[in-house]
Each structure stands twice: as C-alpha cells, then as structure tokens.
Amino acid sequence: MFRKTVVIKNRYLDSVFLMLAARRIAAQPGISGASALMATAANRKLLAELGHDDAAGGALAAAGANDVVLALEGLEAAVEAVAAQAEGWLAQGAEPASAAGAPVRQPRSIAEAVAARPDSSVAVISVPGEHAAREARAALQAGLHVFLFSSNVAVEDERSLKAEARQRGLLVMGPDCGTAYLGGAGIGFANAVRRGPIGIVGSTGTGMQEFSCLVHQAGSGISNGIGTGSRDLSDAIGGLSTLAGIDALEADPATRVVTVIAKPPGPAAAALLLERLERCAKPVVLCLLGAPAAAGKVRAAATLDEAVALALEAAGLARPDFLDGDAGAMRLAATAQIAAMRPEQRHIRGLFSGGTLCYQSQAIFRGAGLVVHSNAPLEGMPGLADPRVSEASSFVDMGAELFVEGRPHPMIDAATRRQRLEQEARDPEVALVLLDFILGANAAPDPAGDLLGPIRTAQRAARARGGQLCVAASVCGTEGDAQGLQAQTSALAEAGVLVFRSNARAAAFCREAMLLLAGRKEAS
Amino acid sequence: MAVTLAELLQGKPVFINVGVRSFGLELARAGYDVIQLDWSPPAGGDTRMAELLDDLL
Image (tube, rainbow over all chains, first blue to last red; front, side, top):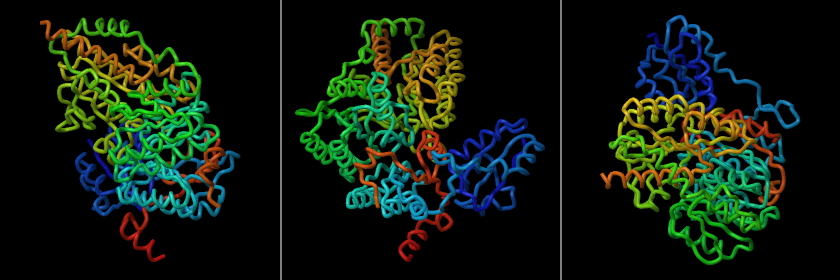
C-alpha cells in the first residue's frame, strides 16, 4: 500500500466541503483511502494514527490550521495521479448565486459584507468553535442577528454575546444551534415545512425538526422557529435567547401558538421560563424532554408527538390520527418480532444522529422502568464507560463531541454510524436496533441508503446465529425534502426495517418489545 | 440600520454565510440572497493573537 500526503498552504476549506472532496477522490480507481482535512494539531495527530507519517519532508509537521492536507492511500500510480492534481481536486465550484442568479463576490469580513449589502439581516456562522465567538461579535456589531452553528464556544463568550445581543435588540441563536426557521427560510438542518400558525422556540435542533415535520404532516405549519443553542436554558446562560424568542413570537402576528422545546433546564432558568410562559398572551405548549410536567396555563408535553397534538389543539386544529397508534397492534407486532429470537438476545442498541431523539427515547424507556446506558444519559440513566463501546442496552448519541471532532455531523456523513452498526451486529446479545433518519437541507443526500448495507449485514449475522434481529426506525422529513420522505421510508421498509412516523412511536414500539423480552426471560 | 427582530420574522432575510459553504448554497437554492464570506482562520489560526489585534484596531 502506497501512502502520500500533500499539503496546500494558506487555503481554508470547510469540513463538509473537504469530506465531499475526499469522498470523490476515494471513489477513484486505485485509491483505497483519502482524507482531506485542515492541518490543525488534532487532525495532524489523527493522520499520524492513520499511518500517514510525515514522508513529505516535514511539510505535514510544519502545516497549520490555515493549510489543507490531503492524505492518500492506494496504488502508487493512482495516488501520484491524484497528488499531482491536488489543487484541482480541492477547487471549489461556482460561488453561491443571489436569488437573481448573479454571482456574488466574496468579501473577507462581516463588516465588508454588510457594507456591500446593507440590508443583510442574519449571519450564519459555522467556523471552528475557537473562532466562532469573534465572528459572532463582529456580526452583532454590524447589526446582524446571529445563527451560530459552531459548538465548542466558551460559556463566558456565549453569555457575553447574548447580553450584547439583548442590548442591541438582536438575537443570538446558538452556539450549537442546528436549526431555525426565520421568515420562511429554513437555516442549517431544516426541512421543507409549510408556514402556519405554530411558532417554536427550541434549544434542540432535531427536536425542532421532528416537531415541525409532524406539524407539517398533520396539515398545519410553522410561523417561525427560533433556535437558542443547546446551553441556553442552563443556569449559566439563564435562557437569554429563549426569553427573547418568546417575546418575539408573542409579538409576531403570524404566530398563534408558542411552543418551547428543550431538554430539562437548570432550576433557576426553569423558574424564569415558567414565569414568562405563564404571562404569555398566546397559548403556550412546553415540551421539556424527560422533565416533570408544568402546571397552570402552560400545556406540558412529555414527548414531541404530544407537543404536536397540544399545539394543533391550541391552534384550533384536529389531532391527527397518526399520533395515536393502536397499543394492541404494537404489542402484536413486537410479539411477532421477538418470536424468532434466541434466548441470549436481550439488549437494544439505539444509534442516533439526532441528540434529542436519543434523549427522548431514554425518557420513553425510563417511563416503563427500563434501563439503558448512554453517552448522553438522561437523569437516572447510567453512562457509558467508553462511548465507543455499548454496554447491555445502550442509546448512543452519535453526534456527541467525541464522534464529530474534526469531522462532519452524522446527519451529513454516515461513516461513524455505519461502523458502529457493524460493531453492534457482531454482538449476539443484541435483539433490537433503534435508528433515526433525518432528512432535509444540509443532511446527507440518501441517509437510508447509507445504512442499508450494514442493516442487511446485521440481519444476516443474526440469522446465521439462529436468531433474528429487529430493526426499528423513524424518518424525520417531508415530501418536499430533497431526499423524499416516501422514498426513504420505502427503502428502509423493503430491507425489513419497521419504520415509524416519529421517534416517539419507534421508541414506544421498542419499549414494548423490550418488556416482552424481559417477561420471556422471567417466564423461562 | 439593523433589521429588528419583528422585521426579521415577518420579512425575507438576507444572509451572510461564514463557514460551511453548503449552508449558504442551500439558502441560495431556496431563493434567498446569500453573501458567502471568504473566511480563513485569523492570524494564522492563533485566536489569542487575533483577539489582541482586535483590541488594537
């Protein structure tokens, strides 16, 4: 095997672009592996671990965060051919065009961009975390609202950015904000949902996506969806963006119902939030996954599905049938699934690309007294000693920092989840696998297709051991998403996956199956 | 003049994209005006140096 690294000095390319370039290169005949990364210290270490020692005469060791490194592996002729054309392989395509179709020249700073387009209103920031606060500050100073996708931003920076935004009458969504819907525009990971009377303030991107897709499927729509960032309702931040978002939706004429979706807040932030919601002039739905229900004016939901039902009801719309499954039918389906399982098959492995869906699934299991380990454990659930290795029953948030350091999120790049599924498939004690598939803008072009291979391999491995593996999944999306809800659902169903309309439904099915498996064990 | 939050929610946003290009491309594809910043880590990736420079300038 021939290896070669090429360093291109003074070129910054984002991680998604680099992943796609590496994928194109890896598909070339004779190339067995290709990585394209910025030469940060962490990435240089990663490349060393992959066996790319510094044969390039010290160029890799001398490279830095502003340099691109292309690490190639394969037949010598093929590797040399790509290396000789490295610049070409990493050339960016056409620049983004304006709505009018005219190419837009690229300014070097936010101030320069605002000077060119004084009507700019939102900065979408997704640079590496250590640089994100600086750009967000520049955006606020230029009078822009901020959608801050980057994670790894210090709490003190988050607090000062949000305090500054409040002074200026601006909104900071993030850091670690995955999704927003502003004036009809879906930002970040967002689905093609119609506009309607239901407003969202959310600290969880996938929670907002799942909620808005279910609202859309029920025939209604979203007025605006304000992301706040995962830490906003911690006591350190005190819900600054959540409270600003509630104010905005209360004043927004298109919003009839205000829905707040969040993981359990800190006690001080929770008190502030409840006090504010109690005096909201519009109907309020609150979905704090895994936290006790609120009381008073606030309609509290334990799951995203329940939040959808309550929000529709508050808007004067009917509760859709698909939110209420037939419990008897679900038990019957679970019974059929476990009938062919071997006695040692008694664990579930949930591999989630959406952190909130991992959390919600744990809440649904906890409600039935079932224990699952997790790298993002809900209160009362055990952690995982090593997030890379499942223990007994485990729900893994594959979007956690450990898995995404220096690489795209599993919603964009399925590689880590694919490998993990292959790993789980080798464990004879696994009875069920629970997955989520998230469609929409900026997600992978074929999330179901990316996992069909390992799903089939896992099913075959279980059969070869004389058992059967049950794979349950939910697909979050709409027909308007490029991936197509129906196409993705059908592809999974054809592979024998039990596909549910929502994560809550899929998790409820798995809960039934796990209770039946536990009962079977007791009976034997 | 900054766009107020109320105007943002009721109007059509204009975006400045700093970082992952595909975020901007998706917004442009959906019919929104997007200005892509030609961004690279400031001061050769040295955040502390960049902040010192910010304070000086």
